[in-house]
Image (cartoon, rainbow, N blue to C red; front, side):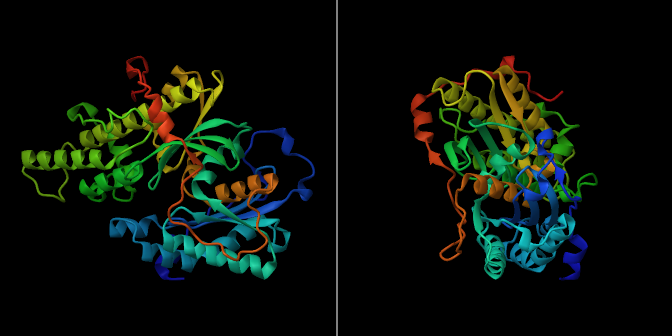
Length: 415
């Protein structure tokens, strides 16, 4: 392992049987529970965890590449691949050490194989193939977005169906989870993801030069500065206002933001790379626009599901997961939207919103219990950089052409 990789190894260690679900039902028969090792390498985090059927995280470890990619201004796939290669063995072994179990005790190995960065996915798949073939263990290929969607069932006893909003640096979609591997896709981003957009805006604003944000990822920097900024300085035209569907678009909004930044730089007489005096206000306005867009599309998804009896008219649940779900401004808006429509809002804890081995292991547990996609041979298994989630019914959503009421009565703005 390189010296830089060693310095960046951030192992998240948990003692044996750290149960995340709040239930007394986990007591008893622990020694008979099946165990799954989960391995995650879809993007820039190398994660591994051992989880049992009751939702107890026996051990986990995570190597984060954030600091390396901050230096290069973004994720470079070959760099991410190399760091995965350097760290995957140590991360997996740390998860085993923390759990106190051996490979022999595993019921299966679950690994992310789709979607994600091809070079990164390849590292996890190659390592897992070697492991399961050497120890003759079943293999469970995992869809990264399915894992995000089901993580909430590790924390809460949530029954199907429920509405899922997945928002991250690489993905943005709305779907209905009807079963462990049964999803209805209502809409998704037609270009880039919200986390990607926020990261690009942060780079354009040179936030790594800002004294309060030099060690923060782009989205976190935007959120931090927005807390003390005024969103009223700038107003951005929201994307897709004339399209009554649940799809998202952030590239056009990013262009509007970039143009506004250029204008502000001219007004202040500074060059690109220097910090605007109004940078906090720009951050607040950008975050607000992203939040409104996400909330409006989610609102239409709620209305569509109730109208078509896809979700119950009472006591429905909205699950929000993915890295951007950790943004408290966006989460507060979604909470108030849920409250106004009699939905419960559930979010995994922040550490499980970002990529991790725990969610992959838990998805493996869900599939193992349901008998879905448990393979006894890895022949023919390939990684898939692009992979849809579930059955796409987005055209049906658009055909319903549901008008979203104005959000005046929904006091979701951060105060």
